[in-house]
Length: 308
Ligand code: NDP
Image (cartoon, helix red, strand yellow):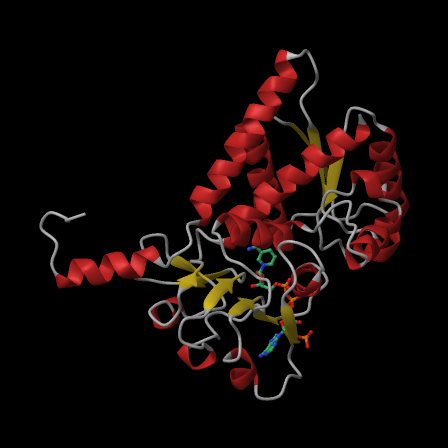
C-alpha cells in the first residue's frame, strides 16, 4: 500500500517501528477479554473476582504498584482491597492477617507486597499463604509445581513475558533462548517456562548471571535474548546477534533534567542502539511491564474459577 508523502526516512521510521512489540496493545486486548468474562459472570448474578493486596510499611515502589493494581482491577471489573499496615507491624500480626485472608471466602487471591520490613521473615510469612490464593506464586509449593510443569499460578512477570511472546507470534520451539538474570521472581521461572516440554516452551535455554564468563559472547548466541539484570541500559549492540528477538524486562527511573518530568524510564537494554539490529524488541515503557499486571489479573481469574 502506498503511503502518501512517504520518503526514505519515513520508510526507515516505519520499518523500525514495525519491529517494536506493542505491550500496551497486547495487554489491552487481554484486559478486554477479562472484562468481558467478568461482565458475563455479573450478568449471571455471580460475584466479580476479588483481589487483595497486603502492604507493610511505606516503600514508595510498593505503594505505587498497589495503586496500579487497584486501577487495573477497576478497569476489568474486579473487586480490590488493600490491607495496609505500619512498618512496625509484628510478624505474628502479619501472619494473622494472612490467616484471615486464607479463610475469607470472598477473597479469591491476594498478593503480599515484598520487600517486608527487616524484622519480619518473608520466608516464614510466605509459608502461611494458602497456595490456592497465591496469585503472585510466592509459596514454595507453587514454585515446585512450576518446576514440574504443572503450575497452579505462574509468577506475574515471567507469565506476562510468555503471554507477550505468544500474542506477538514469537515461536520458542527449537530456539536458543538466553535469559540474563536468575532471580526467583523473574529469571529462574522464565528459564523454566521456556524449557518446558509444552507449547510456548521447547527452547534450548541458557541462564546467565553475574558469574557468567564472556557474557557478550553468550548473549550473541541467542535467537531470543531475555534481559532481567536490573542494570540500566547495560545490554548494548555488542551483546545482540543481528536478527535476534530482544525482550527487555528491566525497568528503571533515571534522573533526566531534559525531560519535563525530571526523569525518564528505561530498561536493561540500550534500546536505540539495539532496536535497529534485531528482528523484534520490547520497549520500556510499553513492553513487558504492561503484561505483568495483566498476568496477575489472569491468575486472579484462575483462582476464582478454581474455587468454584
Ligand atoms: P534481581 O536483582 O533480583 O536479579 C538480577 C539478576 O541479574 C541476578 O541473577 C544477577 O546475578 C544478575 N546480574 C546482575 N548484574 C549482572 C551482570 N553484570 N551480568 C550478568 N548478570 C547480572 O532483579 P529482578 O530479577 O528482581 O529484576 C530484574 C529487572 O527486572 C529489574 O530491572 C527490575 O526492576 C525488573 N523487573 C521488572 C518487572 C516488570 O514487571 N517489568 C517486574 C520485576 C522486575 P546473580 O544472581 O549472580 O546476583
